[in-house]
Length: 388
Image (cartoon, rainbow, N blue to C red; front, side, top):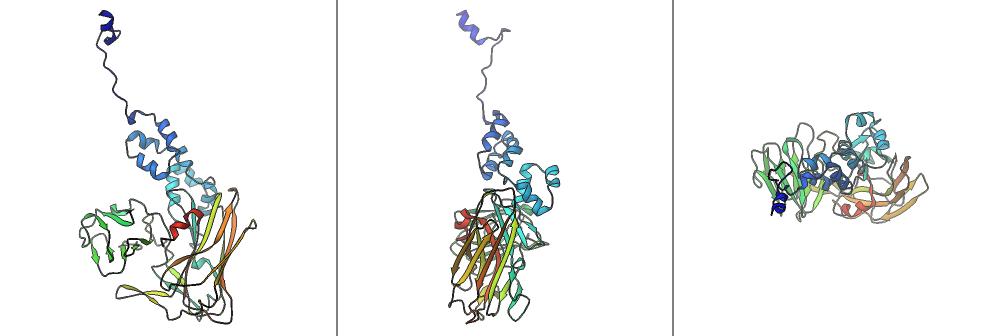
């Protein structure tokens, strides 16, 4: 009996208290961080909300360095002109977050960003950064200020004035804790499921205007923000709350009125990380405008695109080439036209990529085409573009 009692006594003779069951908070931060290396960024951010230990582990430099492109320092040097400010002032997590925001370079004609979920590089070239035959002759081409020049972004959670945005099952959920009035949905949180309306949002009011898609406008002191959802709850276009500045969109497109020889080309010299990439032209047949708040398509100048296909070409500095062709159809719809794919095998040097769109059959004129931009993105993102 004495030996049995001694099991419950410590060396000093007092009763020992059995240790409590260990929890997640008791895991060493280094162990948690070592596991997070194998997770994607969204999973890391979700785990960071569990407790303080996980939050501290999620900030480890080696966790986020594994999510950055292997040549991220070359990317920073190309876009920002140096890495000193980033290395000295920002941790790896903040560098990742900064690179996920669209950054403009080459005089604002190009922008680059990382896909938030994968860390893959995406790049876009505006119509102003393309070489367009006859662009300086207003008889043929004109540059049009429009709110339809936009690009594919990953929607983020959080933003200025407490606004948060997310997509759920093809619908759009938004949180607007700072709104005082809202005629669509309830204060704080609403689900725009099944709506087909134009909605203007500001920090104080939300107004339902008419039935033609869902447009969300955040009116700030700088530039509007909008998301477009069609009647089937499919996301058509969306901008980003990352940076509410005048650079969030290129704001202009090139519009072809009439010409015999169509040639729109360009090139980019950039340190792409290793991987497979695809190039797309974002084009629309017909010119969009608004009448009484409703989007309409003017097909007055549309002609010549049904006679011969448009040819797309690309070539790279290491000898890769691709050629595709297609007919321009479906007036009034922005479409991504696939040029081709190229592969980057090394990340230590720049890759120069040239691309072009031509229709040079001079037996007939062509007209009524809008040119927005050229998108270079990882090839696995091709399925995403089919929804736009």
